[in-house]
Length: 105
Image (cartoon, rainbow, N blue to C red; front, side):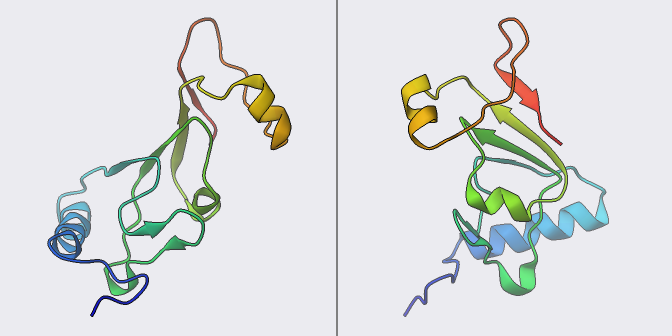
């Protein structure tokens, strides 16, 4: 049986292979929204695989797991309506012109 936080196959093997590629070939790993194997609130659940992408592109706004992220961090999209941002006290970064992406780290 699958335990909470345990990554199912074939994803567990894919994550291990990505980590090996990152180390052996100096590959840059990019994750979109929440890195594979990470909990949206709790962060890295990959255990021994230790999956840490080099770049994170958060969609709309960073998730809580982004607090544990170390690397280049971007926010993509201007999708958060002002009323919703105000409701959750979200302070969105200033986008320049018509840009849809901003680097926050």
